[in-house]
Image (cartoon, rainbow, N blue to C red; front, side, top):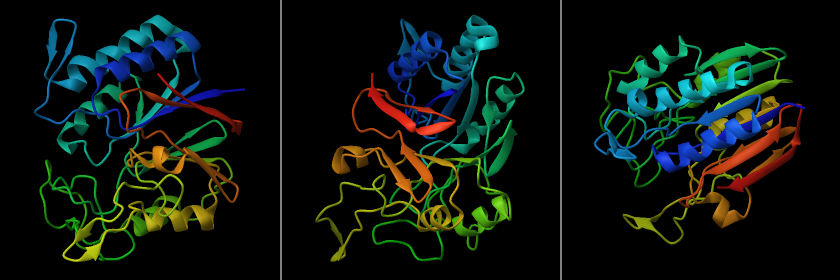
Length: 286
């Protein structure tokens, strides 16, 4: 059976990446999925030994995967990744360039066929309270939750290649999948489906302008898409604390097996599952 690894929301923490690299080298999974929020905050640097890392992708991420590729040879996994709402899109070109070296497949609102599987990547999340809007869109309408900043406001690190006022996650998913078969479709999302076990934020009792905040911050469009289209597997992140609040990191939604690798602790949360039997799965903290 083909073993797959899924991680998300590593936020440029080198200790988590080092743990991931060690596990990949030790156990040689066939597939590795990275579900966004890959990078540190743009002004934050880290250290690898005595070396300061100021350009995370060029100085750490690409060399780390290249070293692993050389070490594993034909056992190097198929790697798929997306960016997340904390990742600056100005860095995207570096991921695209590294794809040409066959380090990974970068998916941005796009799909890639691998054997019997169609693998989709979709990084956008509904509006958040944060100012960075590179990877935020309206969800199913132009409604914005109390305390959140519309996608038409805030700032972006690159000009958008779509109409920020009218583009929605719902429309994107319709255009991306059209009438495609979902029987062997794997979706790498950053946002979880709304009101699922994977979508529980620590917002209990919090108010903005006397309006209570919704404790669920995932995507209604993704929720509806999963319920109606029933893809094979969906992978999610974004809501770090959800698993610690709900006690769940996976959920069976109809026939769809949904996983979250988001984690609010210092460890690497590694979701391991069998691609041909996703009910065989576990989550380990390293």
